[in-house]
Amino acid sequence: MTRSEPLMEAAGVGHIYAGGQVGCEDVSFRLYPGEVLGIVGESGSGKSTLLSCLAGALEPSSGQVKFDVGRQGLRDVFQLSEPERRLLMRTEWGIVRQNPRDGLRMSVSAGGNVGERLMAVGERHYGQIRDQALDWLGRVEIAADRVDHLPRTFSGGMQQRVQIARILVSRPRLVFMDEPTGGLDVSVQARLLDLLRGLVRDLGVAAVVVTHDLAVVRLLSDRLMVMRHGRVVEHGLTDRVLDDPQHPYSQLLVSSVLQA
Image 1 (cartoon, rainbow, N blue to C red):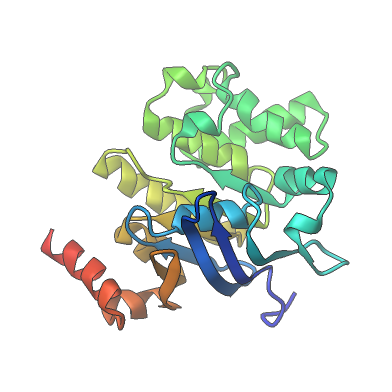
Image 2 (cartoon, one colour):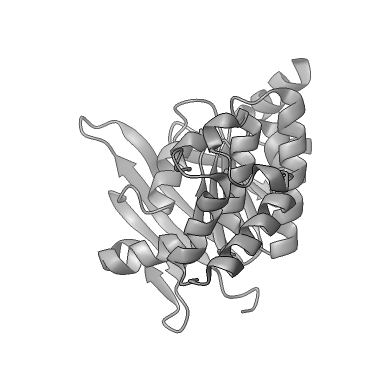
């Protein structure tokens, strides 16, 4: 795949909720393999609605979301059959949720959570599954002697790392991250971000990261979209947008961080 062939393409994506509330409006971009796109904005800006549309959880009222499914090239996600979309979620995509409890099976061990994702993509050899689970838990700094422990016995930061291992073990091509460090202590956030950045870069995974935290996108994303009232008001290279914001709203976001 070359740079000229996007992994995902959003064209005029919009969603209007019942009652006429605009969730997002006329959002377009291309995401390339291995690229990380950050989406920022205050609460109610439309970034979470857009993420739901991109991840196939919410059908847009207008526009299209296309993904490169292989030999068939870019296909509209919402024109795929339900089995095709489920397969996509198990193999090509992953979602890192803000609350790791929403992305883990709390009644299954840490190793079992990672192993389930492998089984979903066809792995059947128990020994190999356990070995890969141990390897990935090690990558996210979970000690081997915790492999059989339930996630509820872990701290929030450790649960988030187990969720990351569960998602990345199957080497998806695209990962959606919804406030991946939200609710964690600052020191825990910093370590988790450093870990995420290394894993994403090593695997060459493309990602869409939604957050209100500019430090998160500064560290993780290549490009940045700033949203306000459902629309993209600024879009460019992350460092350029954060160091020299052009739109008054982007300027306000950046200055509020500098003054904090």
